[in-house]
Image 1 (tube, rainbow, N blue to C red):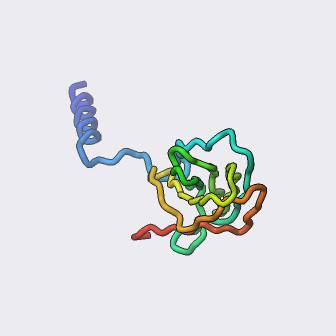
Image 2 (cartoon, one colour; image 1 turned 180 degrees about the vertical axis):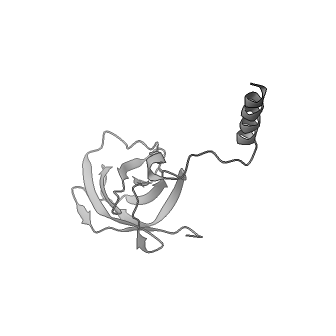
Image 3 (tube, rainbow, N blue to C red; image 1 turned 30 degrees about the vertical axis):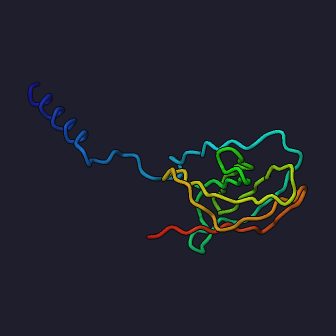
Length: 142
C-alpha cells in the first residue's frame, strides 16, 4: 500500500514540475475563435472571398479566422469575422455604411491564440463582391 502511495506522489510531482508539458497539443481541434464582434447598424454589405496564404502557400488548416476592420481598429470597428476552411478559403461579409473607407485584414491563429497582420487592404464599396481576394501573411521560422 505504501509503495502505491509513494509511486503516486512521485508521478504527481513529476507532472507538476515546471517545464513539464501537458498532453494538450497544438491541433486544429484545440483552436479557439477570436473574440472580435462585428459592428451593427450598418447600411450596406460587401462580399470578399479568396484564399489565405502563409509565406506564399495556401494554408491547409481550419485553425485560422479572418477579421476585417475599418478606420477605428479591430476592437471598435470590426467589420467581419470568418473562419478559414480546411482548404484555405474564406468568405467574409464585410459591413459598412460609407463607400471608400479603408478596410484592413487580420488573421487569427486559433491554436497559438495570436493576431497576424495580413498585408492586403481594400476600399469599402457597398454591395460589391471581391472574388479571389487572397490574404497573405508571413511567420518567421515557418
